[in-house]
Amino acid sequence: MKNIQNKWIRAAIPALLLHCSIGTVYCWSIFSQEIADYIGFSKGATEWAFSFAIFFLGMSAAFLGNIVEKDIHKSSLIAAICFAAGMAGTGFFIWFGGAHPGNVLALIGIYICYGFIMGIGLGTGYLSPVKTLMLWFEDRKGLATGLAVAGFGAAKAIASPIMQAMLESLGEGGIYKMFLILAAVYFVMMFVGHILLAKPAGWHEPASTEKGARAIDVIKEKPVTFIGIWIMFYLNITCGLALISQEKMIIKCIGLVGVVGILSSVTAVFNAGGRLGFSAWADTFKDRNTIYKIMLILSIVATGLVIVTQGISNRGESTLLMVLVLILLFVVNAGYGGGFSNVPTLLSDHYGMKNISAIHGITLSAWAIAGLTGNQMSSFIVNHFGEWIPFDHDGVTEMINPTGYQTVLYVTLALYIVAALASFFLVNANSKSKKADKKA
Image (cartoon, rainbow, N blue to C red; front, side, top):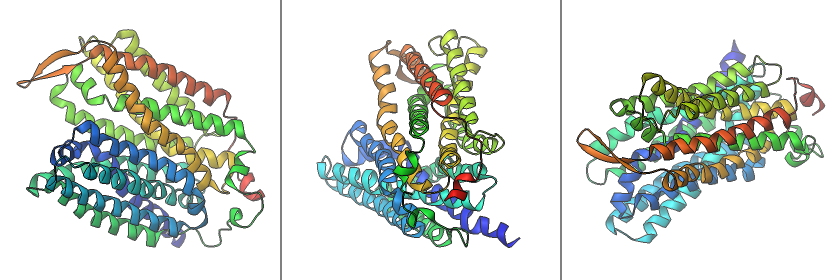
């Protein structure tokens, strides 16, 4: 009973406190327009803050993975301080931008605070609880890591209505006040998680004492497998971001304007559910890579069906076409989330637990690069292919590009196929065992 309690107190609960805090980075779309209006810049200019945050999340995870490996308390404290300081700094520069509209210093300050400083907190905070969870939940690693990463995915659904309410109730300057208040709230949450987080008593850390246990040396044992995992992880994220970034306009395009908010929440549930469901399901397979094959095949089939039926460009001419497009969005969101939650456990199955935090961190560099390419790729396609047409609804007129959204699918289908080929031919079959850990 005591061991079961420790699993939750020392691993699961602190992981949720950390991931439910840093996962709010995905709430950017809730307040990005308000920031742009308040500081006197275009939304496009401020959008780079989010791209930088995701980029530095991945890069800080890649370069600070060794710190996480050696001392999770130091890394979780760094995460709490950087994330909260980044939020508070963002609030300060929003205030400064409001007092001096159009001042480039405000924009640069937001880039540094939300992008760089918060990005470091995101990367270290994302990594810190993962290995601890796998050590405590040794027989259900997928379920454990899925739980935490689901918290990261669900953070947006939880925090979005709270942030919206704060923006509406805080009055003039509510946007910068919100950041200052949340900086304090999230610091408390993450600091409590930092205090509670602990590896099981008696766990021997081979990487810190044994020669040749560096992450790069471990990766060299199976370099082709690592390349395959990196490629399919990167492409899955790129395709996910490409479609998710156009999600709301696609839903409007097929004639579901009245329920776009509800459907966006439903896709968020699939995103979080995929993180938990696919990782828990993967625990039942002899080879955890099987779950990636399933996710990628489902994505290929769903994308192919919408391409064949021209479901988006036909703009919901029938209920069947609407259903196929919604299934595509649900499948892509679930696979996007599942891709994240299964990476650490897949890596541990192939490379053991030695330096898994550092190896996981290097793999997250794929997330950093995808964060700069996924959204931009789909935006480029939509802006350069097809035709913008007026769309009247609820007394307003919006410009939409059905053919452009449809064209994005041709690219994502090709990328999903490449990712599937990497999963089938580069990632070697590996039954889950403890041999690697015993050798360590």
